[in-house]
Image (tube, rainbow, N blue to C red; front, top):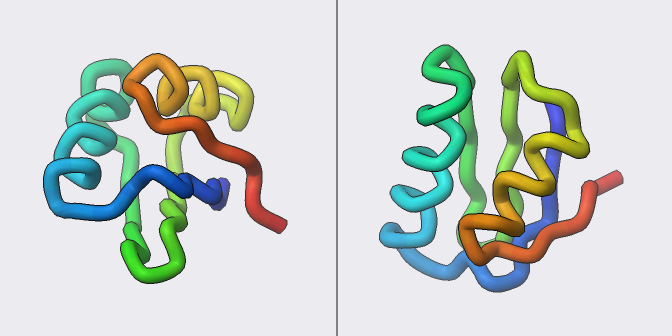
Length: 66
C-alpha cells in the first residue's frame, strides 16, 4: 500500500477523477481517501513512481507520505 499527500484534492469530483485514472491502468486497485487530510492510500500493481506520475498527469500534484 502506498500513501500520497494530494494537497489539491478537496471534493468528491477529485476522488472520482483519481479513481477513474487509476482504474484505467489497474482495474483491481484499491483506493482509500481522506479528504480532510488530503491523502489517498493506494494498493495497486503499479509502482509508487507510476502512481505519482498518473496523479500528476490527472492534475493532482502529490508527494509520497511517510
